[in-house]
Length: 151
Length: 151
Length: 151
Length: 151
Image (cartoon, each protein chain N blue to C red):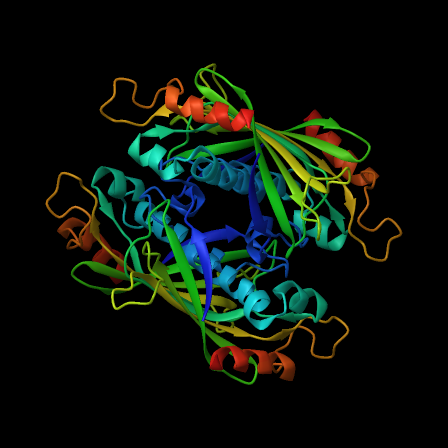
């Protein structure tokens, strides 16, 4: 599991004083970006700009269990779901951080939202015959994802 | 059907030059807000601040069929799905606006994204015993929604 | 003067129920984008992607006179200030739209914010020797800007 | 000086692959929010929701020296400028983080943007006679700010 800690700021929140729900999808994306660097060992930037592989979202969804307030500290958890030939399913969970306890360690986990995203791999190399089309997950990247998923 | 026309701006787009996917949820919410005013005849602001009814999103999802580029003009369509005792399902579709044609009028509709959101009704009146709890759809609001859905 | 009408939505606003101030800079940028298309007769997209001219902001500022609430309708006015060899100064004003009155037509204009931005022109053509450097305003674009400013 | 480290993500950036300039004002605000908690010892949330003091921005400005790219790590520095009776001037600087070096420690600081914001203090207590009006900086808060500024 990869975890992105987030301090909920003024700009995340709406006039109800809670996170405006589209912001959760921004948090999911941030979790994915940091997952590349921190868990797979290859910065998202390098994959996009260096290897010219894009990860357009083809499906995403979220369920909101309880509101998250301005000023709270939460954790965005990322797990890997189904890994296809040219797509990756990412599973998210936003949990409150309970003081003095590793989050998610007990039966009383304070879940705020769960999410699921499917990203496809897209060839971003203008010089490639497959430019802007889907592409299979490269072997080395798949190996890193499998290692993460099995950890 | 309620339609929100949107010009895709610089700020909607990411380094790939296409709409950053969380922005679609912002567009969905904008479509809902204008639906209240334009289709139901009661501004969202009045429902929230005047009648103190909130509409927290409990579930949302989207599928992305094809990318939407910076500078494009699209339409966000809103239809009503299932209307429960205290929740409303809203169905969205983002379509490209084909020049010289009413969008959605032909078999060649240029669909970019589809979405579905379920909002619950929440009592925002601090003086109410049900403050911050779910509440049934008021009769007059239900009548307006039914009239829209049947139109 | 170019005017962008804006309905202030849920997503523009913060927990105080008023526009989160960075959003004003987004509105300024939207006003500039629509100014290209509507007032200069050349869509911003065409300038950026077609002619490969960028307009990075080198300076911006804003003063906030009175808060703008969720649900309000405002107008973002754009005027042209000083036009240099390779930069353009844009002057903004956000005004409330007073019912039954052309905004800004009386002495009682309801000004919410004023802003000022200086954009430089940048060569975005990878094939150009001046790639990613400043560039003078092309004559045809200057003529359009002068015509707008003199109108 | 208070420092907020920021990883520039996909969502901060525009189709030019650099930070969309309104996002810098979001970063400035985040720096201010964390300054309250980390440097003044009182979380921003507690000031707003507990003590019911708001900090509306009355003026802000920024100069952009060089672009900040997707994937970069930067630091947002906050210093205190002039502290008035009922307003605080905050000075910002966004600098690139040079590997193996404490940022800002040498003559070759990689400055991307500088900013300046003036916030006023506003009484947010509905029960107060001064509700929604300006208010002087409370003594204990001024003492904390002075201690920070003199540090």
